[in-house]
Length: 475
Image 1 (tube, rainbow, N blue to C red):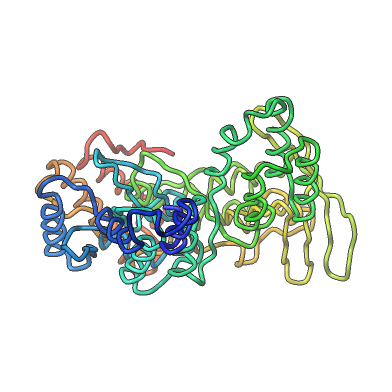
Image 2 (tube, rainbow, N blue to C red):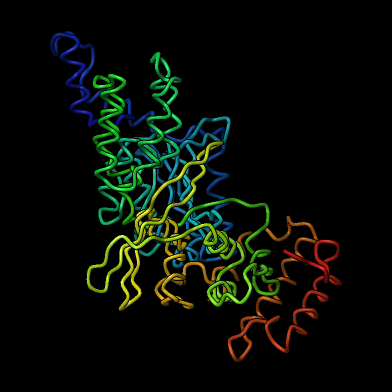
């Protein structure tokens, strides 16, 4: 489970026993034991039922992918599967994938291993999943190599995991070109367990650690803040903090501003429902005569437009101050009020702006990490009289006018098991999406004939689907 090879593990047992002669078993016996233990602990007939299910799915849709890993005795060790919708969605959202095995979803206690991405609405989207018999390097390597087969050999640009050592080893083998990052949430979740026994934990240590993680915007700032934390609270011998510091390039925000992490949220509204609203009901603008806001409203999904809108409305409280000028590059200092939990504080950010090509970068790193321009950059654009943005700051990642094929693929193939009204809803929604896709001039239904078509479409849904929709639908 720790990712240690058998020869090293057996060697430690030999040392602990005082020699080979004091062990009642050989290294081969250990290998045989592990092989016998490595199988999915399914109930009677469970493996057969699972295989039958996969065969049925593949019969209904050849794009369904499933692979079962068997041991020498024919017992099921590991399994991976992905439906056609997930496989096509991965073509659009392969930039960042999270992989987490902390789920125990059944009575057998088998680790469930989902690959999860983020769609253009900022929602989590399942890109494949597995059930595994153990969490060692060998098992993860099998799972990652199977994932690559399923996804036509395309590895994710970045993968985010917890601090599992075996997982880290397997990623280096299976995804050598992918950027591996550790989930900050998983790390900070362990803070009380690892540090709460110190007398100073609640009287300053915890706040100092959070400040070190979240308030440092450069590598030098982090290193200085970390050293102060260790010295002030005498943490030099804390093994956990030592290991975190050794791997700081994998998780500290100040180190990660070259790694695009799109951000994830969950919502009760389905992706199809979001696509419908994005096509026919626009989120409202708040700023009068703002061409930048209008541009984002036209192009971005409603969920991501609201993220941009929050930054745009925050400009009113900012007053960028020119610090220096080096040729065409201006450096501004922007003081902003930042809220951390229940407290607010003033933080000064640095923004570099190139007048020649409008290239801009902020020390907060929001655009690099979240794909959304920060209000500090937008404030600098405003004070330089820029009323439009370079196309490089409008990301295809969040656009709603790009037709993504996976949205037209069913995610369930047991249609007979669905309620009649659910089947009816799915067919009606697909009908409208198909009509939207074939508008000859590239515009979507609802954007033609001065909004008349939008009313007709909403009326169509209101009449045919019932209380879930109405012509008065609003965001």
